[in-house]
Image: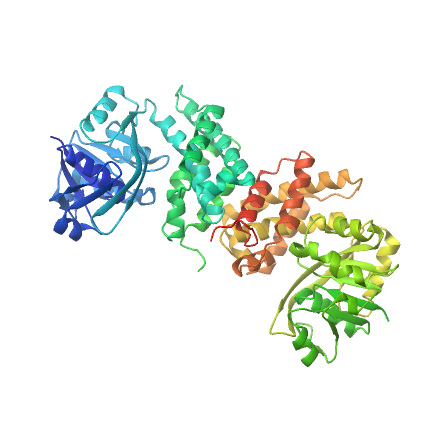
Length: 315
Length: 315
């Protein structure tokens, strides 16, 4: 049995934490909004793979109540990465590892700089999960997680995969975490970006409109160019494949039909947008590496302006 | 005395038509929304240069009631250019000339193809005018009109300028109408475009934000490149000057302080956007001429998607 703490226990954190608890691990949920509800009634997962319920999950308001664990599952929004330091620090022992189930680029660098790179892992969840009433999580579709180690150490990655043995979660191995992050951006930049800036629209509208579809492809080509330059700059041999990877993303998006990207949901609900992790950091790297990315630059600028979290935003 | 008919008599058409009436011309206003109010109470211009009132302006519901005139002042929104044919045709005699007080590129070509290029003129109003209650027009600031002839015939242009003799309107001569149109686009594309796509913001927000300011400049450089290629393709020797013209536009925008571009007002009020005349036609020409304009392309795509007039728009 492994001791796990879930930090940033929104829908994604609660879902994957509950899967680990279901597999028999000792899972501590650090909760804010849902603390009372989960303590009183437990945690309900309504899953397309079958509902289940944790009757008495271990819940806490503060990380300090838990103390050192084997694994920290950090599922904060990327906009809250600055909060991770204080939330995670009390959970760390000498051998504690941290899995960042978060969107975007540069998070492992930030957390690794605080706590040591060798203990930091990234998880890319391909899933459709949202919150229901307090204490209820809806797992609507998909669910696989791609796991990578920040330093791409294969034996460290083996341990991360082992955590999920027996859990009802499909886990995939990313030999290069940076490649996996860029491959996810290949989808998130065009579809989260255009879904917001084109007016809060679903992916089918982007796929079905000649101009928006062409814009999505143009953005993707820039992401491939920036990603491959970044991979090369990090001494990695892995590369995105412009034609094959873009084609695969477009086919997958076609299959999603009417899909609301996470940032589009945040936008229409007036929540902070994950601008810097998904747009700002990729753009900064592209600029630093001399890769021309006009679409990414304009999208980033517009996303920053549209972000409700912007301090100087007009009413 | 010259017979003039004003078609598309919104705020801009009523203002300039009233100035011609004030100068002693026989001005017929073709009205829809304000017909009853203007017939009952006349037309009031509340101007920063002094208010005035037309007690009994000549008002009509249909162009056919007026018959042939010397000049047609067409101040339709560019989105309504398709309506111009039926509205203008009954006003045409053999020597009738048409002045298009409208935004954007390609309008003179369209109207010239219908009625003959030699009788078509373009007017670029640099002004801040809006409608008050029915029968009232507010002239808030500026007011100069740059006039050009569709075929750049200097003697035809002399006649257009002569129409305004004695009227309290500053008129400026555009030896190349195409250059004047592109110079106006140099402002309209970045500022109308970014003011809408960045969330319905005023020009001071664009000028004051590092990213948006840089985006505006990037868009302007593309407009200069596209415009100069278009001018060359039309056999014109006139050119935009990338550095000087952009610098002049930025200084002028700085001086406007908190300004709401017309397309941004249309956007926040849910009216059709002048997308094709300001964005679509310049982009089509850039693409046809092989000029790379990624910012213009993405802005055009987003503006089309954000246009409330779009038939397939999501709710």
